[in-house]
Amino acid sequence: MPKFSRKSLIAASLAAVVTLPAVAHIERTEPLQSLRQSYFAIVGMTFGPMGDMVKGKIEWNDAQFAAWANDLASVSKVSVERGFAPGSEKGKTRAKPAIWENTDDFAQKLANFRSEAAALAEAASAGDKAATVEQFKQTGGTCKACHDNYKSRGYLY
Image (cartoon, rainbow, N blue to C red; front, side):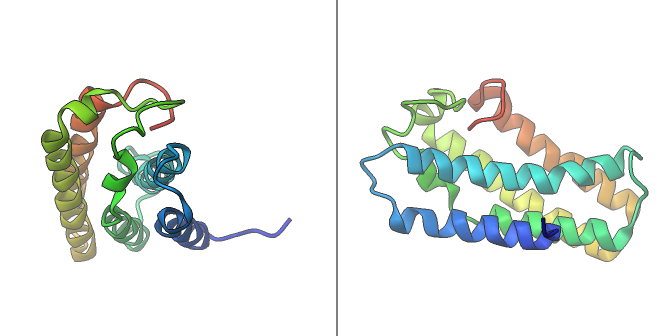
């Protein structure tokens, strides 16, 4: 079986996330759920290894951390909001109904995540480990802010 690089997998996943709505019918909720599940899976695949590096589970590497942070900032720009269209809360999902009840707050939390992800990429590119770790914590805080109110336990979104 051929091995694929992390960047190849992220690029392929992003391509799927970006093109999915173009081929999906809005009346069906499954493609919308797939969009958001794919988006957050990529975020997790990118954020997770950075967390391992911050925790010392893997050796710190400025260049690798910066590459992951740049990937996260790029992924964060995908318009995942369209994956939360009215009606997409039905079916198999861990997204709480509160998302559709508090759309302005949810949108603000996504905006906060995007802003902090961009700041993380900037900090990591500067090569200051202490500042990067602090910004990583700030970025993680935006994830937690959403998870606390809008995501049930488990993997699916």
